[in-house]
Image (cartoon, rainbow, N blue to C red):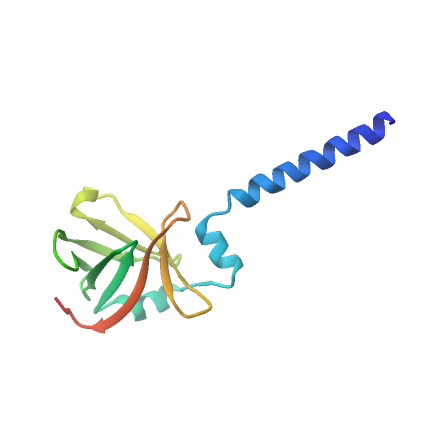
Length: 142
C-alpha cells in the first residue's frame, strides 16, 4: 500500500472515530432538537408560565411551581418533603432563569423545548432534561 493510501485510510478512520464520539456525546437537548423539538421564545415562555401553577415531573417525583406575575417562584413536592421560594426571570435570549434558596442567589437558566407531541421540557445549560411540564393552571393552586 502506498504512503498516500495509508494516509487517506488513517484520515478516514480518524474522521469516523471523531464522528462516533460526537454522536455519543450528543446531549438530551440536542437529541430532542434533532427529533423535531422547537425552542420556545421568550414570549411563548411568558404565556406558558407567568401567573400560572405548573405541574412538573423530574423522574418519579412531581412538583407544583407557581410563577407569580411579580417574579416570585414558589415550589413544592407533591406529597410533601420539600417546598421553597425564590425568583425567576425570562431572558431576551429565550430562557427562564431561576434561583431558589439553595442556590444562594445563583441563577440557573433553562431552555424550554416543545416536542413533536406538544410536551414541553426544560433543559439545563449542559443539555440535560430537568423537568417535563405536565399541566398549567391559572393562578396559584397550592
